[in-house]
Length: 261
Image (cartoon, rainbow, N blue to C red; front, side):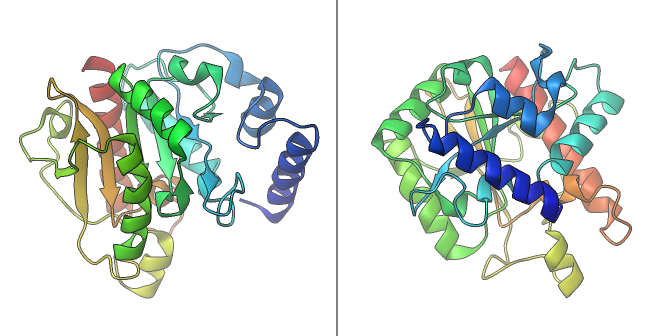
């Protein structure tokens, strides 16, 4: 995100808070500021970001955690969805908080840098209701044991009685369109520039999940990976194309799975 755009976003968020709205509540004006007037056009699929508060109680979390890779990640990924599938995908992304009335309009939800999120009991109950009613959550771009513990702290409030498990290779989400037999670690740009594919102590990538009672995958947990960077830097010459291509295939499988299961 450019510095000028970042300043404008922060200014808008401060203005929203100043008029007494919930810090993570998104009005149509905020949607249009972030994503343009095209955000209003209904489509069968929308790239929807989860706007969450950080542990310090600030809606943006650490350095605007939930906005990480915005807007390039969704712009590039949606371009790939248009090229590679016949899905009627919205031209622009959307953003929603767990307490927004329109949450249940969006069955596909993306949460980034969840090593810094915080869901209180009310939000956790709302997330649980969303997922059990057919919602699908993808979490991405968090690394190492410390961020894992922070993520699990909130997720256990969502599902205290459901285990987080490794997604088996035979799961339909790995084969709904592309056969995703390559479990390669998808790195962030910073890791690539450092000559490695991992961050912190997150050397081993994991594809984990949470299932409902019927065996439907409700939550996909891409741990020790950064698919958002792979989408964002699709046109960056020094980001390896092989990682972007793989991240596109995973995302499209996730989208199709969410629409058919």
